[in-house]
Image 1 (tube, one colour):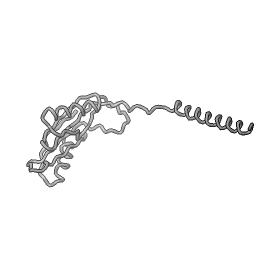
Image 2: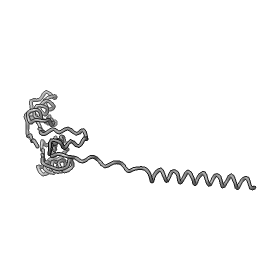
Image 3: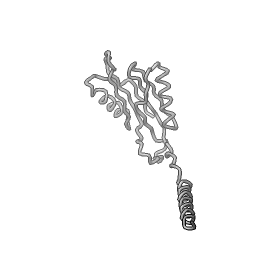
Image 4: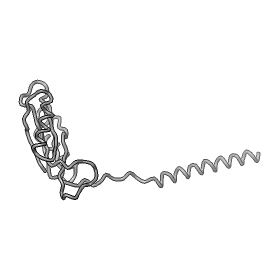
Length: 157
């Protein structure tokens, strides 16, 4: 009998030790690091393809703020299916790189097909360091369908 109680006691001790060790693992584990600061001046373009409505916003301190306001502008213009199609930013200061890997593209553009049909009109949106580059990339994306496109709107932060 005595050996069974010793084995049982050892088993309880092992279980208790394992439980404490596991608890220690959880208590010493560091929470995930917060995202890096989002430095710069943010802008976003939202577009609703079914009805060709769009919204822009630039001058935000945070990426989410630019996205939210661009969506609101698109919806205010009666866009039925607004989505953010481009996000970009400019430097606030030349040495403010936040090491996030998110590029500092200062300008963005939205291009839309010249003629709409019963199907969705082709469109393209892109950002680049200059207005000319952003417009060129947006046009190229739109014209991949074989349609002729025009820049509908551009913005630089």
